[in-house]
Image (cartoon, rainbow, N blue to C red; front, side, top):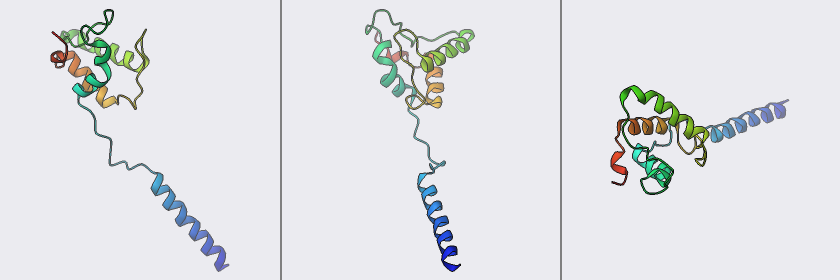
Length: 116
């Protein structure tokens, strides 16, 4: 009886130890990149002026009345792709990074990244 109890107790401790090692630490998230870093590492390859003739630069500011619609279009296109543009997974561009990127694009904050 003592052996069964000791075995059961040992298995419980082993299970807790394994669960503790495999459970992600919910208190630490990977640091989000700035909109400039996301744009330069993900978008600029194709969307910079002079890179591709058929891809429009996306850094010009939009009027406030068009920002929500344009932002939704960018979000959908980033997640689902369009024509030659691939879809980007959440592991490549997080929701927080995408939100910040859209805000920066709509306000014209990234306009200095575009070639003159």
